[in-house]
Length: 227
Image (cartoon, rainbow, N blue to C red; front, side, top):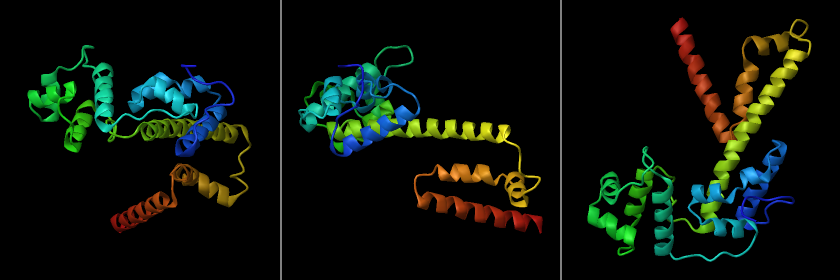
């Protein structure tokens, strides 16, 4: 199968499998088909991993790992085919060289496989094509895991936004207890619920501590201004 998965979902193992399972669960909660979130062609474009290898990894099958040079050439070629100029044409060697801060001869040697890339070459090319660090060098399972992590973050934002909409609908439909409950009225008047909801979406307590620290600083600055 090349366009996604039907139940029971991807069979990947290890760290990749754990991420795939979380994405699968989120997709189910959002009522999305697995074909949408596990589209091998989209994941290939996002990760740089060939579509057939993406499929094999998601199926829990061993996939051949090219060496660093072969991986670089494979993903560089994909970048040139998929990240096009606004006019729909691929970037020329000269444009890549200028954008990555190297000579045309260097760019040509890298494209043709006549020269092994350094990390500086990879970083410069990734910046030029506006892809994430490691796109050209990460092993296939790691690259696919990174792509699925970005999918997970997008789904989490969608899920959080949907839950917030539902909560707002429930609050609109339910009789307001604010008139009878001073604490509820205080929370409502000062927007505490909105702040708490946003803080709850942060991934760790460390991030939430930063929000609390920033709020303390803001409160202190407002107090000084008022005086």
